[in-house]
Length: 318
Picture 1 (tube, one colour):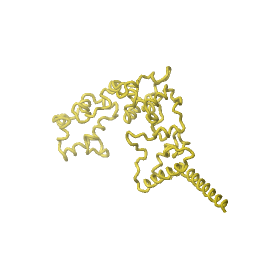
Picture 2: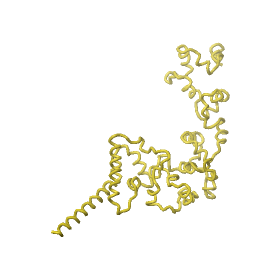
Picture 3: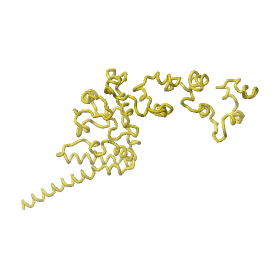
């Protein structure tokens, strides 16, 4: 009788352990996380990252030793409960990638499950990095390794990765972090990115990049280079639109400066200065008479002056 009771207890214990292992394995699959539609963008970025073989719970759950399986299962249950409630109630950040300012998205103990703190940096872009010194000084893996498991679509190019370095290097807050090329790039390194080659970069593509993140330009170029090429302060100062000494003064003095970037300066001006402009009705010149009849000429005189209309309406265009 005693032996039978002991066998029953052993069987129950092993059964519970088996259930715990089954729960652990079953809920560790990324497919479970990806079953919620709001996780689609994050799952897609994870699949494109260097961590695509690492399961979600490996990073998003507190690391536990193998013998702490019950605690691990409890943590998993809490994680699933939190995410399920957020899914059902819609109380989740949108987009899911939203980060809390000043809070590291991943503690170092998660990274150190797989990565040694003394590892040698192996940058594919031939960058000189003292990894141990950076790790000691910065105190957090994610101070440099931003969105490693969930990269943005724009990340992965040399310039976008370099932009993370310049959150410290070359800033007044970190004067000892030099921005000189030779600090990070070895001798003989080709400093001109492949994206800069050809007329397409100069004619327009660099403006698209600068419009999204002008700080990338400042990693290599001084601001005066932009100003000397564009003929005006670039990027335009905050007072560019409102002040009389801003864009209107430059446009009146040399319209060609505007056309360098804005292609068709007259049409561009019309979009803001002639709110009633209808592209389907032809040019502004064809439409302006009707608009003046409806709203008066005060708006015209505000920019063009009282004698501007006289040049055409009395003297005739010439």
